[in-house]
Length: 182
Image 1 (cartoon, rainbow, N blue to C red):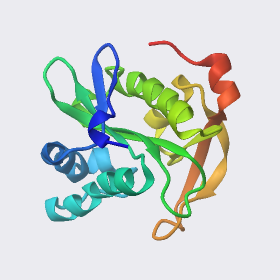
Image 2: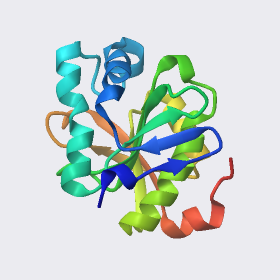
Image 3: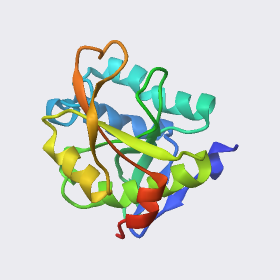
């Protein structure tokens, strides 16, 4: 698989594997206490670099990872969203994080629909989950807009094993029956 060939376009967005030029915007996202609150906490720029490399690494090793979400109109990196399944994860996740200045504009829903379609079609997944902090109301609402429901409580592997999460999700059949439109 040539990563340069992976590209999804929606009406407003481009989803593609992460590239080096995405890092500055990613570092700003992960350096912001509010945007990083529910994804492991904010990090310094040098620590953000190491975390940023997780997604390109996942693409190289697993053949998938979260997409960089790019605004078609101006080329801005808005956030990341897509398939994610590290060792020990509770399921096939579609996860997300977006810059605070683009919250509430529908980008996550639009990107989420495209990424879920891609994961079911290209990865052969039969179900998806979203690991959401019980206090993260915005992510819960996004999961609902994507057709998922709260399935159970759970935990993540170390170093997050002491942090309880809600595991939201749905099956391929449920997605096909009630796929939202943008």
